[in-house]
Image (cartoon, rainbow, N blue to C red):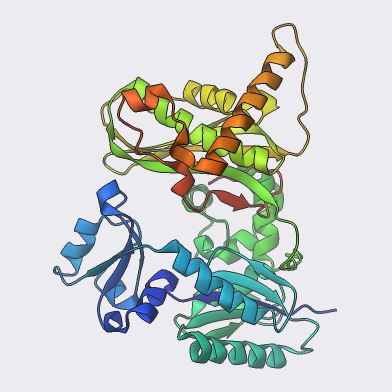
Length: 418
């Protein structure tokens, strides 16, 4: 039976919500930014007027204002507000189907196969939803209509703002294959470069490349992308109340000042590892891979990963393993640090050996759980590490950092190339 999948993408969501709460902003160039006082002052989102000036996500506030000739209105991000509006919109989607799968705060897939029988009917339903979003929430949305999740997502990106695009089994080669390969979901910068080196520049090139060649360069991901490009994705749309699946858990922070020593980096890693470990324990998970991300003061980023011998949810172990990845020549200072745990499992597969004292690990876990309880009851700052206070980095509160839980993607083995 054919499937009819919609992908909705609320246009310029953060900026649009700010304009809802402050209508005076609607005809101005608007950028939603991080807290400048905490050195988080980069552009998180912008409206179309700011985009016309060349403002980009990731610009510093100073750069963005220069592009807009100082006419840019900068609004500090209010995530509680965005989550509230997002929930209202997705609750409306659920009046059409119980298969509503979020893909970030402003995007969602809807499987409407039980409501429609043809692509014309699916298009009409998407148009109805588009109009309701305008009338009921004052927002615009782009919707892709297709027979799989990948092409539905691609369709929502093709016409913006406020449009509906249909990609069918009959027209996908015409509509999709001429597009640059990076338009396909999960083809990021690193994958694009690898594909381009192989002479693959369009989605059609990718679709028509021998899958064994793709697998030899990209591993299992090459096979997955080949499937996507040929319109063969059969991944179901999850029900909105399905149990949460987690691929990785991580935290990153822009530090209150640039870091200049190994000791400072080690202290920040520990703070972030504590938050990651708490979330792992909260979800009953253990990680087998840790990653350390570093951003220098010139905004260059790099992340390195390693597998660890025994799965863990201990902050002390995660911090130690992450710090072992730190190898920096200090030609620059460090602006931001990130810690991420992946290779998640609900079973702590332990390989006992002569050098391992399992009783010590049990005691450490009990100790860290007691700290979890204290912070849960009295707030994060009820207890701090002396090393963090001594280095005057105790302004960092990882519990205030959002977007730290990453859903399972199509790359089930966790070997994404990005």
